[in-house]
Length: 123
Length: 396
Image 1 (cartoon, rainbow over the protein chains, first blue to last red):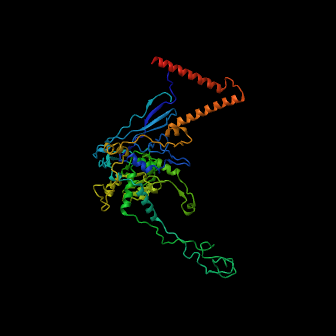
Image 2: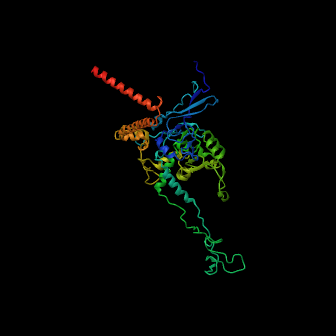
Image 3: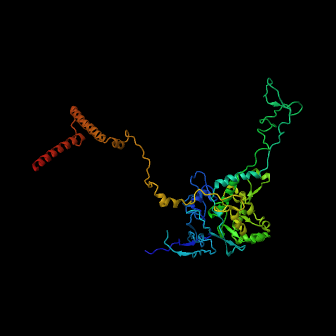
């Protein structure tokens, strides 16, 4: 059986690695602040679990587990720029290097090569 | 894992949004202050009352009549009525809040307590929290600011922008630093206020954009002030109303280099008290390590806990033994025997009855009839049993 090269080819891309100063901001803390009060929250009538429209949320539910912003690592799936298939966006966990010293040497993190095209079978 | 005294380095960007190599500032300790949205909310609420102007009704309103009640016996309500005659107004009710042209209930007075005082320490706590929250990208994004493309958070720019004096330069800078998207959002959010505020000089409303905190204004204010959404503030005069608009933490703040460096002197660290605020030290957090997941997995804590109860015990529906045989059998297993016996004896009785009746009526039952068949079956069985007994007795 030959595997059909699916329409759904997907590629990986690193989400814009913003250099964030690694603060002691645990995801639990941030969630505690954000859970009932943020710009992405969508509450609708008669729906007990609110939705959330932030970018890296896989189920669009407003929950600790699926929130796209608060975790160190996250995965998102968006349309590929050429409209064929989808792109997986991931957020790498920040290295602690910048945290350690107060000396002048700043190690900048090189973003990984942007796209690793992988062609997989159709879902 | 105590409060990390190791502070990460924040790189400074120049006005062309290039990273200025070699120039980086250690993160001021304020950014590690505990974030307390409840304190911020409370202080914001109180402080925003301080800009209010008193309003009240005229104290003469409704009393500029010499009305007097007509008393009883005149077939009218006893409300004070306007004296005299010759005009519509005569005889109308006056003074009461229910009367047309009367004074309102509890006329508003200018000596209402408009302003609130807040404890200095609380005010500073709220400020520190607000500054700390502005350094967390999750919080700033959740507040709604569009900061996907900005190079770093907290965003520190070289002092060059303090010398901007043309709005054109300001716009160009914001574009380069990728903060323009936030301002576009402000543009898109410009709309008319809902409600009567429209006619009360509060016609248009819009979102808040980035806040620029500077140290020395050398034209900066004038360059940036016409851009919608932007607020300008000096480090010396940080205001909670600007740092946490609406009482919610997480405003997008753009710091100038000298402003950023001032923060350490302003707030100090836990070890060193602040140099500018007399005797002030940053608030102590309640938890030094807020990562719940790691805490709960830690060995020291697990050692003290009882093992987790993974089995989910669900509620079992209680069944009535009087109507549900299985429930009855659970309680009284012998009931099965009793029931069976009852059924069998009932059947037997029925059969013998049929037989007797048939005999009485002189009807011979057909061989397919149940009565005959069961009689035959039982006879056969008895014979079989006897045979087996005999053969067993022979073998044994």
